Image 1 (cartoon, rainbow, N blue to C red):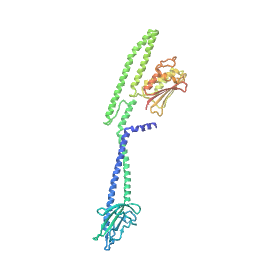
Image 2 (cartoon, rainbow, N blue to C red):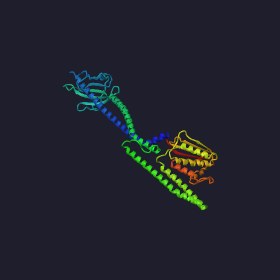
Image 3 (cartoon, rainbow, N blue to C red):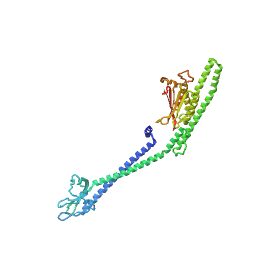
Image 4 (cartoon, rainbow, N blue to C red):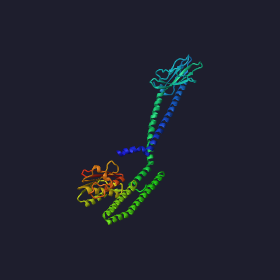
Length: 462
């Protein structure tokens, strides 16, 4: 659960997320603009077609109506549209007198009741004696009306012609088109976004390969970034390989210098120790003791320099269980009076560090536990659930333990709580330094066995 939450927190910083989000937003905006443009053009075309249809019906109606000698309107217009014959269909036409000497009124069979049009003052005629307006139909539908006054004979007798079309049908048709268009564009948009996301993920796949290759280098399973990369990423891989190689040379050069320093100091210190012992007396013992202390301090700091040189560079791989089993077997033979128990996990744990460092760490802790234990020491190696890649070393004894207020003191170099026991006081200090250099943690607690419980947590490899 924590892993997923951490991934979600990292998503806004992800290049993949940013590219996909930007392309998705751009695709949505593009589809919205396309939808708006198409629906606008479709509405304009539909309304122009609707108006053209009404105008054509109006001219047909004018051409189909005449006037008799006594002034009666005559004619049986057939506009060629069945909707004008369906009652209350919303499609109507009517012809009414517009001047003196004209009487009678004819209308379509679909028009079952009279519809009042607005006055000329409200909607005036244009220069061609035509006007158009909207009004409510018989069933409450919205009607679009084209109206014209036309002179029927030489006596200037005129009639008013009206053609009414159901504008609500047009709106429903436009709404239906918009729904279908929205459905098609949505499906197209989802497909386009999915294809775009897949293309982006595939396009960024080489970067994931670089990341995985770097993880393998860091874990020690590879020495460089191997494989073929696209032309845009190949320079990055080459520069990274050059950096890894340069770092390796620096580490090797540091180790060589550390070894040279150790070799150059070894002989002078050995001479001082031998001369001090040969001199004898209090001064000789003082010289030999100080030289021995110097030798231990030099070994200690050379060890720290060696660990620091390889930290955060290429990681070494050290299986934990075989090393611990071997050390426990030796200690059981050397200390038969102490019961030493070992508990190992079923799965193998691989320490992300050098074997010599783990040996020194375990050796100091086990030596300290065996020295202070009354009769029993317990060693437990276990993975830590939910921590990713950490494992735990727990060493307990049934000795006197360490008071809480003294736990910090024993981690200092040369600090000893009991001078009657043999030792230099460097063991736990070396352990603390090693754990710190590897980015782990060290805790001194009270054991359920009565003595000291040392808990060390270090990084493991998957």
